[in-house]
Length: 445
Image (spheres, rainbow, N blue to C red):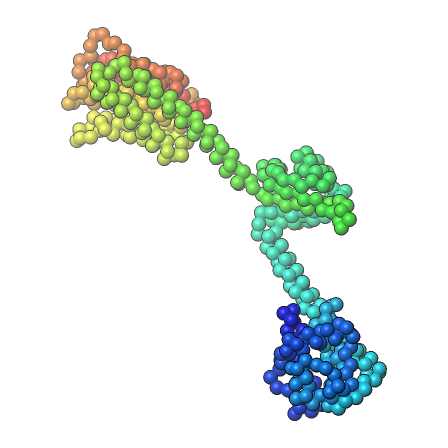
């Protein structure tokens, strides 16, 4: 048996007497013997030697012939699938002439052996092909049975030849349901689908998103041609990406909202800086005022972050914003009325409003005295869908006869009137300030 690495081995031996059989097969031939056999077989086709003693051989080969007492040799090449894979050698102990009939019979034997080997190779290849085909079919079934995909085929006339896949369920269709139907009829109301089909049937590969009803599919169209290059149809894959598409849309909306809110917050900070400066008596006073207002802005952000910026409950806004003023054993602040949820865009200005009212109460109102208190009452007008806030101070210092509106008042009015589209009234009674606020609850973002 010849190998591709220029080596050769005696692999089988057939003898009349088993006692004469060689041991330890396979036996490797010398490189000189391999070269001699290949040269002679390619030159003569069949090597026929009547008397080995009169024939010149490589030393290793001559020694092997003498040790085995071989007198005559006839060797026929074994050609398998067009390649000389080895030879079958007929030997006798005595010299002799090989008859044409013997040469013909030996050739038939070797050719039969070669055909037998070729059939075994074909059988193995067929078994391997069938195995790989079964594996491919199993993978195909796994893909179509457990993945949200649709596999389809369309011939050159636009008629479905294949329609499989779990993704068909999302369209309310079954496997093979559209086979035999025209794609131009099935998707007559979806021009974008037909445009991609026409592009593929004209030889252009296409890929895109297609919306069918409330579902979104990512689709690939691939032209299919025969061996001569003629277009015979197209194959396609569609994946249901409805959920992913919705998440991407939500992400886009969230990024737009984030951009909008960042710009609003920057504008709010700039406005707070501008409003805090005129009423400040010193740099320390300015820093303290600005710090308090920025803290209120931070509280609004923390409250909104807990609800993923969808909104905030009014009682949470009050408790977080007024926490610095609620320490001690005396209940200085009381909340009454139903809790109401604020839309996201109203939470920030509401925190600022509550902070300004509390700061004013600490500086000039009821929280500047030992016994002063504040009552905050919430109400919800379901008919108009509006929120009412009443801030009422008790037991504060005497109210001056003349009140000069400051920057805090301007900030309150600006927040309620412009940012919240609401109404605010400030009334300074004997016991202290009474502030009434009404704002609509519609989220106008």
